[in-house]
Image (cartoon, rainbow, N blue to C red):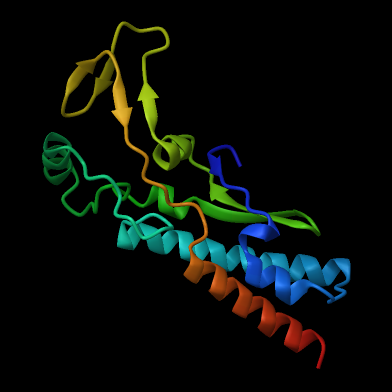
Length: 170
């Protein structure tokens, strides 16, 4: 994924670790389970764009009033921050590169700056043109984390894994 990805090991999802300990899954079963987990995590991540909260439940940083005014004028149906046309939210996807891992992330080029925040400066020009602001020497974007696993997300993933295993080993 070119945009932004957060990696989690099983230690971050302790309930899932307990469920999978002692269960021997064939490679194709692991891939099927990981794909199911990936789809669940996509849904959990996309829900954050509705709640406008990070995985820990903290509200995303508010937009500057000037930015809000610009969005209201140009994009009356937008739901800022991060939801102008739904592009970032809709780019959330999961991949299972092998039978031991699942990746969940956003494919938009600007995904990382919104996840972690940071400063944007011009590479070759003297200034950046920022709609609603004009020319600026730099732009600071606050972090608005949307990727990650909350304790409720982890519990939901563990429940999904329990159901998967129960269905495989009746």
